[in-house]
Image (cartoon, rainbow, N blue to C red):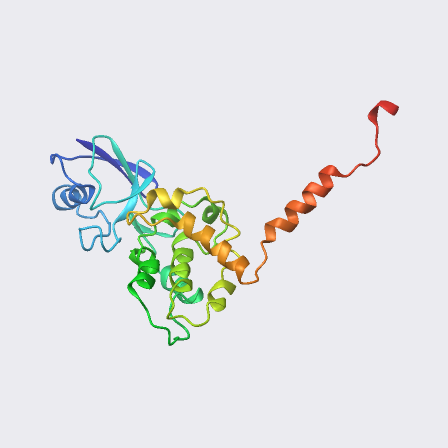
Length: 239
């Protein structure tokens, strides 16, 4: 079985003698038997830590959960700084989490029920694998975009009844946030935890409007409609 790995912007082909193995197993085989200099990340090896996320045939996947096939093409994640081979720089993760206040700031005295916990359960399952960022067309052109998993994490705390002041959370996502998303759904497709960032972002838009924030796209759309319907009085047949 042959697979190709992009290293230093060059495609390198490897022959794997193992069959019916995960991509992580194939990478381990290469490192142990063919090329010890191959760099990649792995941790739990069970789809929990998210550290082994890579591109498999241009689709984001966890190497430990993905079955490798003949002629598969393996690349590092997109839109992040490359350190070496399949290893990318993830230092921005902590900065984004702090910047967007994805934690409880003001603790309320409300009693939390099991039903309340269920509202934030799915969003709490994010493993920060960066797959959603790599698949995001907005992040490709705007590095200031908050990104799918950050917005999902914000919703987790907006829905958390332990948080007293949700407006602080909503404030930080109005610019380069929920209104910049194209709702393409790529992030939902690639999420290994079956989180739906697209729907989460739509929910944040609704909650923003309910809390007094304006949709900046409405005014521009109204302007375009007025412009398109404006009668200039120009008649090309009069000349």
